[in-house]
Image (cartoon, rainbow, N blue to C red):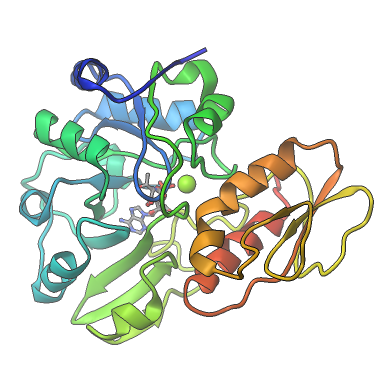
Length: 312
Ligand code: TXA
Ligand code: MG
């Protein structure tokens, strides 16, 4: 099994050393756990794709320390700069034009002319990026097509031997992947909903939704990206005997995302609930309906993907 360690000084030293050697380290972030490699080392990044079994057309997020580091790798216009100032560090990923002079490995962007950048709001990756002095390429630390991990145990269960070190920062505070936007020509295109909401972004510029089948804007948006192994039925007020019922608010369920009906609470435990349901003895999963506004849009996006049958 992989090493799971509390991120004290000695574990962080070892993590930096592994990253310098081109090895992988699983790290907590405020959103979900990431499987990190030095983003300037193509071989190291290739290991990420191999460990995840990820289709290679799916580009990765480069995690930077701050806007200054971002500017070394991408062209940051006024709107992008404003958004970074307002939302970084935090759960907002910006897709912006890549600088050809930057030394990011091509495999990070899967050959695209744009790069996805995010500055994580978590002390562990921040210290690693600062000490390494380079961005960390990191997708969610799970096998491709499966539920994103929000605890070190999820990472170990999904990736096992394929990751030498997992830094255990406890459960992720937000529990949903970052909001991803493309910024261009003074406008924002929402590529993946997340905890930075449509409404918050609309305060800065007009926001449009990504076209469903646009291969360039949303190469990673495979519908079954967040799928548990079992069938998932949505908007379930009640459940059959063979279903594990995930409740919300007044719909109690076997496990409740938030008895109080809080969307923030529900987001933080959503993936853990899907993991629990997937690992249970029941043959299928039923999920109560969750309101479709604010953070509820991101939750419903993940639930919809979870319910889409995996074609693998
Ligand atoms: O919260 C998060 O974003 C987590 C943590 C670890 O930071 N990361 C994460 O990464 O969810 P990942 O690789 O699972 O999802 C990144 C998404 C993919 O759907 C990918 O297609 C998209 O970002 N992406 C990356 N670069 C892109 C680009 N240049 N253009 C469009 N989409 C891009
Ligand atoms: Mg992912």
